[in-house]
Length: 387
Ligand SMILES: *Cc1c(COP(=O)(O)O)cnc(C)c1O
Image 1 (tube, rainbow, N blue to C red):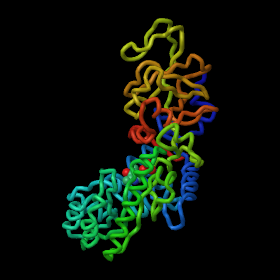
Image 2 (cartoon, rainbow, N blue to C red):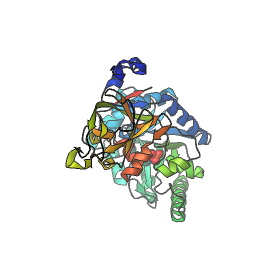
Image 3 (tube, protein in one colour):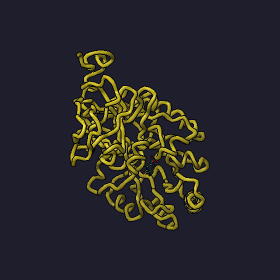
C-alpha cells in the first residue's frame, strides 16, 4: 500500500515538514493577535512584544521578523544573548533586556543597540561605571520583590536618573497578581499601580524628566485597562492564549493560537492482548490493538507527565491517547480506533485536526502547569516555520 507521505497534500509540503517533529507558526493568527491587542491599547500606547525564551518556544527570530513586518517596533527579552541573536538577524526597533547583564557583556548592549533594565540602584552604578553610554529602562519593584529598585527608595531611583552614562528611555514595573479576580489580588494589583504612579509623581517633583512608562503584561492589559502606559509588554496573549485552560476559554478577546506542533508517525504495529509497551511495562494491551510510535519525546518538550493516558494526540481528526511512558525521543499512542493509520503520516500534538483541538493549555492542564511553561520548553530540535 502506498504510504501517505507520497500522496495527497503531503507531496506539496516542503522538505522540513517531512522531518520528525516540527512547529508550524500561523502568520495569520499572529497578525490577528497583534490587531486585537492593539485594539485594546489606548492612543499612544505601543505594543512591546515579549519574545524571551525563544518567543515562548515559537522561535524568536521567525516571530520577531513577522512582528517587524506587522509594524511592531519594540521587543523585550530575558538576556543579552537573546537580544544579540535578534539583532544579528536584523530585527529592527527597540530591544529591552529584562534581566541581568554581566559587566563583561556590557559592550554587547552597545554594539547591538540593546536597552538594559536597571534592576536596582547598585546595578545602575555598575552600568554607569562602565564609562560609555548605555540605553536603559529603570525597573521599579512595587511588591513582586523580584527585579527593580524598591518603590519607596525615591532618593535612589531619582539618583539613577542623574547618572551621566545612562540614557534612560523607560521606567516600568511588573504586576504579579493581575491574573485573578480574587479580592486580595485585585487590591494588591491596584496598590502596585498606585505605588508606581506615586514614584512618577515624586520623580516629577524632583525635576526628573519622565521617560516612557510601562506596567501591563498580558493579564494586566486584559484585566486592568486603567494601568496603561506608553508600552504594554505582551507575551502569552500575543501567542494566542492565556496561561490556563479556564482563562483561555473564558477570554473575551478573539485570540488565535499561533503555534501548531506536529510529529511524524514512524511505525504502526499490532500488539496482542497481554503484551506490554514502553519503559517500565507501564502499559498492557487489554485486547489485540494497534499502536503508533511518534517521533517526539520529552526532550522536545512534551511533558513526561502525559504518560499512560494523561495526554493524547490527534491523528486524522481523532484522539489517540498516550500509552506507556513518554520517552526522550519517542511517544507511543493507541490508534486502535483510527482506521488506516500508517507510518509517514503526521500527528498533531498541539493544534487542530478535523473538529478537535488540543491547546497548549490542555497539555498544561494535564501536566499541572501553565501554557507558558509548555510552550517555552519546546526544544531546539523542533524546526519552526511560518505557514
Ligand atoms: C515575561 C514578561 C512579560 C510578558 O508576560 P505575559 O504574561 O506573557 O504577557 C512582561 N513583562 C515582564 C517583566 C516579563 O518578565
